[in-house]
Image 1 (cartoon, helix red, strand yellow):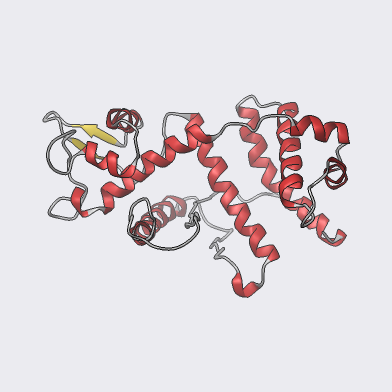
Image 2 (cartoon, rainbow, N blue to C red):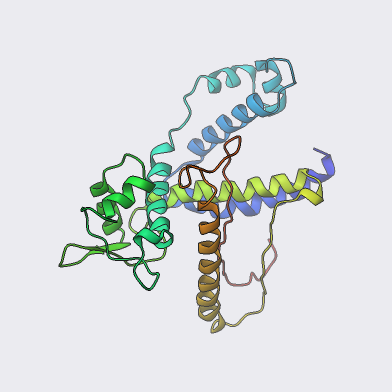
Length: 275
């Protein structure tokens, strides 16, 4: 990177680290632990993404790129990768079930809204919903999780009713932190792509914000933006579901990719001084 770019880059890193470090400290993660994770990422990225074509990436080159000693590089390379799969899979499975319940005609009522579903039976049931859109996880396990976080309720007649528009973990801090890893990584990846690609090929990256809003406006904007964003996301969900080979097995094409659109809301008091 050009030296002139390092100053604004480090200023940006300082800003993005503030909320991250707040989360780390609140959850008892020390600087030493964070330092070890950062070291592992530096070595992993230098090893796998900054090599020379046709040549195996050497410990010495990784040492030069990262600024770590060869001994530290070797030690870090021998560490196992932190396992993050279980939390991601749990979130993705539950989210897919809720999205399909709101989208697929088999599971909608006469008004086009998510129907109350029987647990089992010959027709469109909760068990069938889970089987189609959550893989081999038992339907009871998915139901228990969704009841636990308040997404569904089981009625007196035994049927299951959807209560919310999306799966958002409410009681598990660990599950919410898995979302942090996914969503922030996607945003930063998009920013990185836009920094290094031709502007004609840039990925969509926009926001709208004003900095002199009264307190009384915030609840109104929060409600309005949430409603409009949910409508857009549901429309995009229906389109993507027609092309994803898990939900549309007849969809043809090569490769395997992940793509989507993320929307987030933010508000905070205007700072007295620019950081």
